[in-house]
Image (cartoon, rainbow, N blue to C red):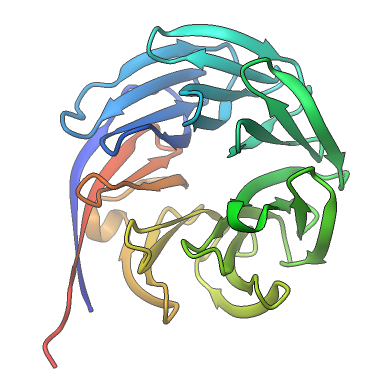
Length: 306
């Protein structure tokens, strides 16, 4: 498999590290948020200029578009979550959940799940912003959330190196020490049969969901922490990004490295790559970095002749 990578755009406008990206209700728009407290909306059809949605006083690590309600949920560090009507650029409400950082936000039906630096996992009803359930399974940070709707399971990665599986009511079903360091990112495979974890130990691991989350694969993937994982729209490939400034493209079935995207070879990012978004818009890949920029990539797969 030959992989061609082309850098299409460099999006600028944030004045601090870009920590997070979020999908929207269509394939060509996405949202970003950064250490400057700004939330922006971008259009991949004409990406040169972002649209400012909100400006908050503290840094933002977590951002999520709740599709059912069409709201934008912002994890505002040290100040809880904010609910935004992004179309009218208005705040609907806020909830002071914790004084800690908020590391991840994910939808669970009509609710939103919040993973925080104090180790709490909270289920919040929208749009009322009322707490429905909360669990404190660790004294260390809850860093990442993945939802398997078909199994009504929520996987959470923690800074105590563990992964914990909860049901939809946040009752603990299973837990295990998964890595030698903090678990920074979790993603279920598109068919829901596997869970991918990426860690500060620079490894990603594959866990067999139907086999009771037994270990099914492990790769030393980067030089430093793996910050995020995302799958291609067709589910055949996935990407990892790292504190080592690189993005790597992998074959999902074989767990084989296909391409390294970095500064030397592709004018990639100059510092840590924090978040990835593999969009349905011409399968373009979006990456966000500590270098204050967002890059848009075209990744073309070409089968080699036999």
